[in-house]
Each structure stands twice: as C-alpha cells, then as structure tokens.
Amino acid sequence: MLSIMVLEDNPIERKLITQMINNRIKINKTPKEYDAQIVLMTDKPQEIIDKVEANSNDFMLAFLDIDLQTEIDGIEVAARIKSINPYAQVVFVTADADALKYTIQQHVAPLDYITKDGDIEHAQERLFAVLDTAYERYESLINKNTSDIKYFAYSKANGIFERIPMDQVYYLELQPQKYKRIRVFADNKIFDCSGALKDFAAQYENLVFANRDTLINLNTISKFDMASGMVYFGPNQEVSHGVSVRRRYAIKKMLNN
Image (tube, rainbow, N blue to C red; front, side, top):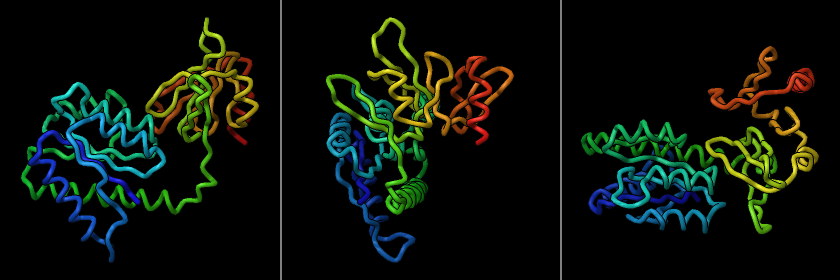
C-alpha cells in the first residue's frame, strides 16, 4: 500500500487537499481504486517525522506545506523524511514561490510542487497528476525484484545499524583526527559512520580506493576526467572528487570493464 501523509497548518486547506486525494484514490485513470490510503493528516511536523520513523520500510507519499508557522518548516521535514526513507516521495504545497528555490539549494528532491495561488480547479489537476505519477512509481517499485536492490549498511553509534540503497552512495572519506570515523557522501545527504575503509572495500566490490583516504562507488560515477583525475557523481555531475595519479589508470580500466 502507498501510505499518504498531509502536513498543512490551515485546517480548511488540509481538509480540501485530503478530499482531493481521496477522490483520486477512488476514481482515477485505472479501472480500480489505487492501493493507497491517507494515514496521517496533521499540522504538526514532528508527527510526520515520527510516522516515517515508525514505518521506515513503507512506501510513502507526503504532501508538505512549506510555509508552516512552526519551528520546523516543510523543507526540513522533507529532508528528514528522505534521510529516514530514501524511497519516500515528497510533494510541496506552497504559496511562496521563493521557497521553491530554497528547496533546490537544500538538495531536497521533491516529486513536484503545487502552488496555492491558482484556482482550485488548477490545483486539483496538479494534485491528480502528481498522485498518478507517485502511484506509478510505487507500482514500479513493488514490481521490481527486491533481491536486485543492494544496500550499504553502516553503524553510526552504539552498534545500531542502518542502511541506504547502494546506488545512492557516491564516496566514503576518512575523517582525520577521528579514530575509525568515515564520512559518507550520498545522493542528497552527507553523514558520518564508524568503520575502516579497508573493511568496506572488502565487503563491497564496487567501492574502490581513489586514494589512501577515499573509497569511490564505481556504480554511481557519471564521468571520469582522466587528465584532471576528477570523478563526477549524480545525473547532473554535481558531486566530484579527485583520484590520485597512481590510481587513475586502474579506475579507468575498472570503469571500462
């Protein structure tokens, strides 16, 4: 089931969004109702975060108001959701066009935006379209053979292990002056974990040394400039890292295999 959450501090708008979602679940472009349900409607950001943490393996879609009159805004909630559940989908609902630019700066990748400044019919069309897209992605995920999905497992502290899909990991870097502390650079987030680079390299064949202090993920490299020794990650090549002169030929050979 696709679990849907609505975060909106205006009770009238929250009710309206909820009605639109329920209508689309029942009547859509398929012959039957969507296997989806609204599991939470609230004006409290922490309730959304708690819900995601308690159901981190669920397929989720969150409609988030950006301009909340709370300590945590919708953009921060989206970032927290993504860090807990990488496959969760987020849609921003806002009247603040400038806030949309800020989401890009924060590297929060929403499924879409719905603005409040248009008429209700236009907003409903947008919501129906984005819900259709979210449901198509949900169906694609559940139909995919989950055994093909590889994960990167790590421990942050106290022996508590977490994991993210390996195809979201860019590179791992040793933290100087910190015993067995590794910084992980991944799609839309950066975090620290404990461990040794040589152990991660032995465990995951796609993680290889770019230099003595860095492992790079061969599977997420989008470009390698042999002359400069720079590898680039992500569809837009927005993340990069250097490769030592001694390792460049080996990296090139592995990428060509």
